[in-house]
Length: 130
Image 1 (cartoon, helix red, strand yellow):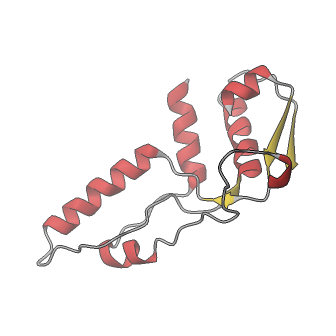
Image 2: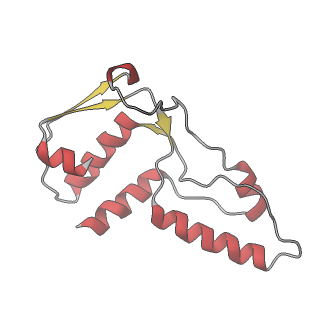
Image 3: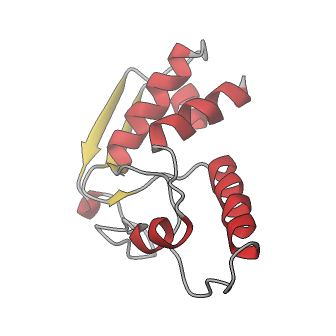
């Protein structure tokens, strides 16, 4: 998104697909903490767990947040307008789900850990790019 924001004045971004943007740094940190909890537990909590940053956003909202965070960090962007479009206007070979949000309830209950909000992950990621 930053590359496109540096190259184009207008971006068209899907506004009807929702998910939880997840920062890999947070994912690694919380996975390490969960393994530490699991290894000190009397029974290893096996199973399938969803793990992502808190909060949800459409791709459009995420694009706006990326460009806003980049500008606050002093990154120069060419983009002046981000236009929200429906999925039907953005043709791809793969069909994308309208809702790819994940529940972390099982993970939080089992390990007693929570992920930061995706806004925090975005700010940290953009800060590290500079």
